Amino acid sequence: MGPPPADDIKVITMRAVGGEVGSAATLAPKVGPLGLSPKKIGEDIKKATLDWKGLKVTVKLIIQNRQAKVELVPSASSLVMRALKEPPRDRKKDKDIKHDGNIELDEIIEIARTMRSRSFAKTLAGTVKEILGTAHSIGCTINNEHPQEIMEQIDNGDISIPEK
Image 1: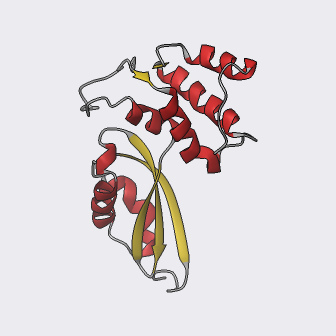
Image 2: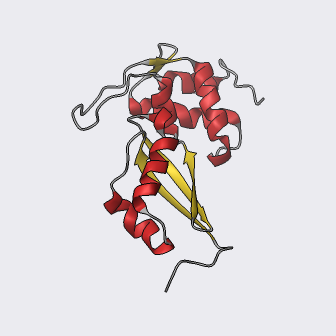
């Protein structure tokens, strides 16, 4: 059978925990048929996700000529969790963490700009509201207010979101 042709580009998307080597057993069925070593891919993922230690992030593996390039695709929830600036935790020991920090609205707008390309909203304000919904589900506050209240203020026009 052998590996795929040299000019063929394969893309594999998967979730990984930042800064940790994924088990070779979970990587093997995905990268094995492409002629790649799961252990080496695990190390590459670990190196690429060191900044996101302890957070679950989506990783995109772009494979060409039996070379894997690791690309991070941060999700809204991991960006919000990172904005909370919580210390890295051992996810095997600490369970059911309350993410009750506070984030500035400017940081939420920055996260929305990052997520804009993958958002279904027509305007940046809509994307900001998507991120506020994520913040609500995580359980943190925005400018010491509940995310729902910020959403209502955006709808009423009390808070304006600049497009640029």
